[in-house]
Length: 331
Ligand code: NAX
Image: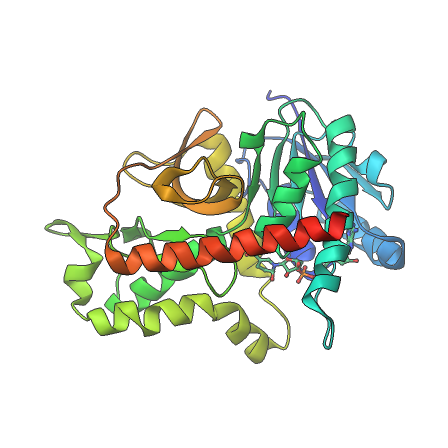
């Protein structure tokens, strides 16, 4: 039998947490033969709700779930974890300054970084979901220097999946036949969903999305804004932010990272920039990556046209600005 894997979910009493923990316990994230122990962290005001979630996990009698740690103590939550999904954070409330929200999250991610650094299993893989996701991940990286920087990522897979979904709806094809879109940059409205390299599997082979859609105005306009603003559209419709799709995409992110991407397919992940594609280094930026043996590699040498360049630079500039804002909160 496989050795049990400990998975931490922070903000586990929240709405993404409620969708995510049963997926993990069912093997959606790590596979149907991988036993797991769930570590769930939330803050004291949410403690009662957190223990309620734990009761439901017990009641669901998941065969793969070998234990549940539910706690408001960050050290207890981090002990021995192999995978950490950081969903907890401070939300932006109406009337709040951007700097105040940043400052709250910087202090949360700084202290959680230290706890992970001291108590997580060596080689722990980290996925930050909570917004501002890229910059929270950067702070976590800065304050957990002994965790390899390759192990610290943020979620842009939801945006990637949204892009696949839009192409699939537009062409009336199976979403599983669409691949290789790219989300570049920040998980914010400046992200650049790029279809220039995306293809669709057809009975006569793989065809470029650009050729099949044959409507550049839609691809360069409505398609991009729909993906960028999908989160807001969900809030408007549901009066709550996306939760099931965020949880499902977080599972996709970790599953592909740990178990590998299929040959010829890439996915989007927010990772520490090494300067590929002339993106500023020292920020967490979403790139196309392939994964093998538990490691991601940025897909190289994609052709970047003038239009893409401009969009990739704009979202990069926003991340540099966010980084500066975050650092100004530290002093
Ligand atoms: P909720 O407000 O429902 O849940 C957040 C939970 O985090 C709450 O239970 C809260 O008590 C807890 N929390 C707050 N501070 C904490 C701390 N210091 N330690 C541990 N737990 C803490 O929000 P939900 O809808 O679940 O969204 C969670 C986060 O995901 C938000 O920051 C949201 O903006 C972000 N999202 C990111 C997405 C992405 O693609 N990267 C998409 C979905 C989502 O919007």
